[in-house]
Length: 134
Image 1 (spheres, rainbow, N blue to C red):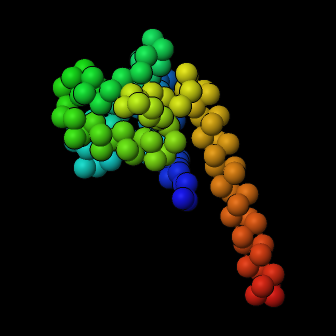
Image 2 (image 1 turned 180 degrees about the vertical axis):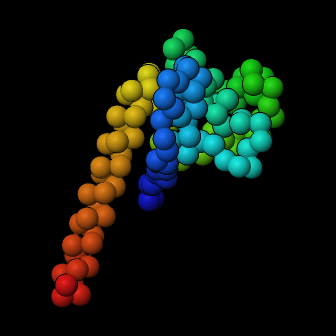
């Protein structure tokens, strides 16, 4: 089985003197959690709820998350799958939680994932260059 992560980083301008909400929006936007089709910002709201549950050391089911956020279970599962695919969220026994207990650790883990991916890309690029005589 091939394991992969879809890591999305969007470079944007940091807000000048941001509120806590603007900082959270900046983090979520930079991690690709906003989407033009997501009119209710449900992925961002889910991310915030997962941050809150991490603070409480709590794992939640998709039904619990849906009830807390007033969203359908289908919407929650859709966004959870995206967060799992990106490596931000873990699922065990139908309970979901952030990969690590705080945001700084989360960003550190994303950085490690990206570094591993880039090292793999460099290795393959080097092999291809050699095979092509470049």
